[in-house]
Length: 304
Image 1 (cartoon, one colour):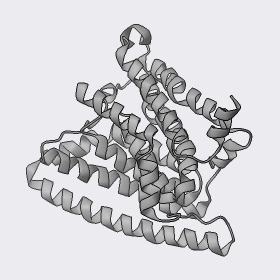
Image 2 (tube, one colour; image 1 turned 180 degrees about the vertical axis):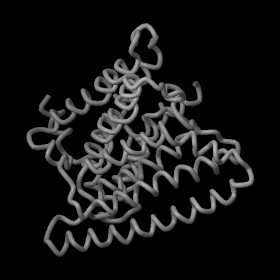
Image 3 (cartoon, rainbow, N blue to C red; image 1 turned 180 degrees about the horizontal axis):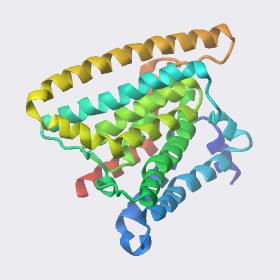
């Protein structure tokens, strides 16, 4: 037991994806059981409970194994007002970028999921709407960010910020078991990862994730309705692409300003690369546990 604890507490590339592997197995188990028999009259509340069991409990157990003081290292803290601009810019990059990426994938014959089946018809009853927001906006933002931008990025950042952002985004894409939509989830994961990296707070990606989910539930169908009108499609995509590029540049400029302020105030400065980028990415992405997650993801998406 002491050897296991020592292994878990030392920096390595095997332990973090093991946590995701457990989550993947739990998600697979949920897919195999009859949810209709479990959810009853309130499927949304049941989904909230399932998310707590699948994400929060393994996450808490992992933190417990890491020892005293580990939770503080996950940056569960408030962000400053000077970090709000980069969050706003990243939000527009996420939304506009996902629209463009989905349009491109759809154009080449790949049809990613636009909106989850549970949310295709948002009821008008206020009570039901609140449950939908809780189940599909609030809980995913809290639970998934705790795991992927909290625990995983904390672990992987020992091998460089770039490796941490890419690895967490890759695993974030896998847990949705959506082959056609994998690129969308990974793109969103990259944006959320950079938000956590630049602000040094996982509350920032939590808020961005929540707003993005609200957009997906209540607004995205209207966007695709507009794209269905052919005469305005090219103009819409051109404007969206131009705006996304502008906000991406603003994000980079704002990140440089934040990193300069960290150095000027003698705060711990985010480090994008430790050693060489190639060695960091190779070590992280070719770890046995992450490869097992990738194989499981491919098998399930092909079978489904």
